[in-house]
Image 1: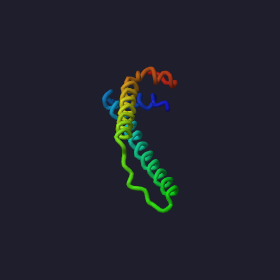
Image 2: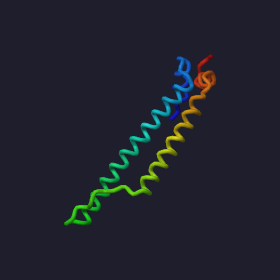
Image 3: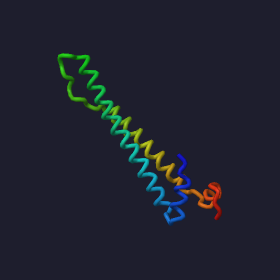
Image 4: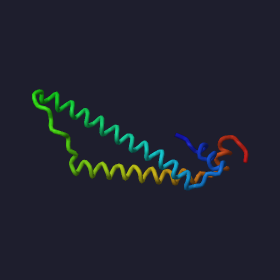
Length: 107
């Protein structure tokens, strides 16, 4: 995913560094949280199906999330969000004239 041209265009049109960082962080964070939600739903659904198939006469009790699982999930989401924040800061420092010249344009 090469977004340097898009970021350079935003800068040419007057976007500030913090606006670009916030935009990139919001996009990345929403993707991370959406993937987490879908992963949890699919995982719990598959676990419920497997347990139900194994115990044909009894329905399993309601799933409870253990402390270790919750803590690990929170730590991983925090790491992903921090990485996304650092990437958004790096990408917001794009040099506009370098990007335009590398794309074949003149400044």
